[in-house]
Amino acid sequence: MHLNFFGIILFLLLVFSQPKANDEALSWKDNRPLTWADFKARPQSNSSALAQTSSGISFGYSLKTRDGRIVDYNTNVQAHFYPNKSWYLKDKADGYILKHEQLHFDITELYARHFRKRLKSIRVNQNLRQQLANLQNDINKAVNKTQKRYDAETNHSINREAQKIWQSTIAKELERLQEFSSK
Image (tube, rainbow, N blue to C red; front, side):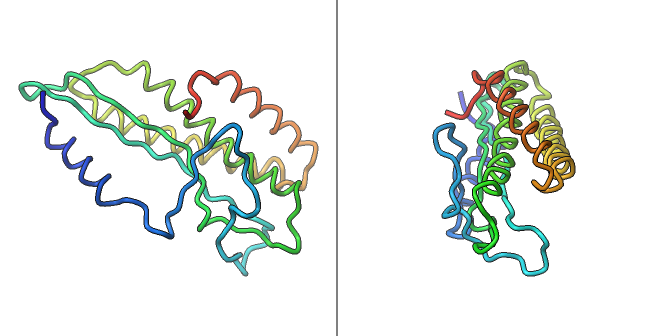
């Protein structure tokens, strides 16, 4: 077995694009909620927000080929929080706002679980690269849409009743997809 050219390129990209100091990332962990100490960026002076969470889903894969045909693949999906791109106003943000920001990160983890679940159903085929790219694109669109809807429906945490509903809904969904949680 040997890695095809794309697998080698992917490997090189992963090796040579290791996070820089400013690209610090925290992986989502069930027993490790965010703290204000995790928010390290300078607050945006032109923003009306009290805090901002930067999070995203990283995705990588490798393909095994034999005689030029894909015979197997492995994937890695992680929900990350980016401390050096996340900020808060120290004199205005409180524990309630932190919980709102935590839920942004939890939503990211929820979609990482959806991603992993959908990856389980993809079988080895010769169109695998395109399928994985399409899935990644679909998941990224879905998580971004949900993040925007969350902020809109909670009015960026101002609507406390909506905030409670979102917290309950996301907690139930994370539990429902527990088997696909970050390890």
